[in-house]
Length: 65
Image (cartoon, rainbow, N blue to C red; front, top):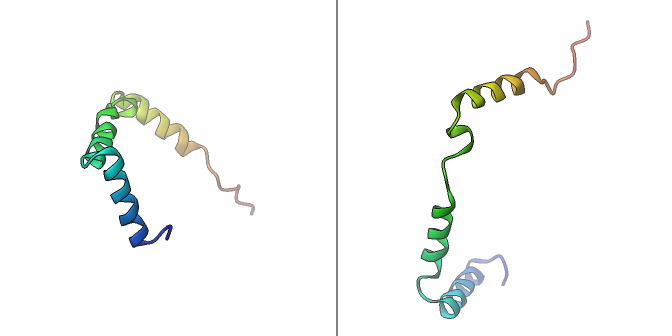
């Protein structure tokens, strides 16, 4: 039954029985708490520079003739 709608419902039921009715709420909350707005969000100049460098590096070959 793996990969079917019925199988998913059965798995959800098993998870709720084993780990409590709030299982999905708890794992969802964990994911939300892990997010921290760092990286490019924190440094716009770094993001612009990275975009500039990435744009210069072409994945296409050179045109001949």
